[in-house]
Length: 153
Ligand code: CMP
Image (cartoon, rainbow, N blue to C red):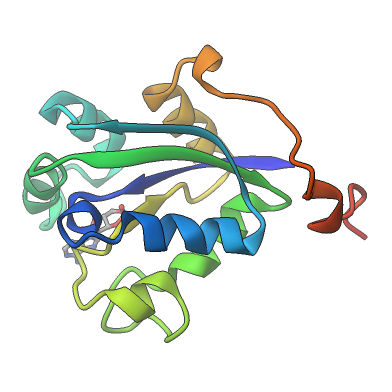
């Protein structure tokens, strides 16, 4: 079982897509183990996107991510990091395959609706940046045994 961080970006909220996008993750079978809305500070966004500092799109990205509220969530499931990134599709909505979240809802590279961790190390760091351990809820859904088998084989 793996955990990943997602951020529904300000464009998702301004476009009233929160419910529809969260539903895509639920429909897949992923479990929401933490969920919070916030208006991120510049400092928090800069820390989160530290690896992109200095890139041509960095300043615009920080401005965008502080231009409205976001929804933060931790999703859990087998190979959740890869599964979630596949659900999102390519970074640029114009290039993302139809059927993916960005392919279905996006037409922009910066305003690409959702951020998701890109690997196990990043997932750990990002979850710790945005959630205290006691905000992550461990539980089992009644449907879990019909979603994925524990051994995954
Ligand atoms: P995300 O997956 O959150 O990681 C970095 C973000 O920077 C990315 O999604 C986009 O929102 C943004 N981004 C990446 N590349 C570009 C680009 N070439 N131009 C503008 N924004 C970009």
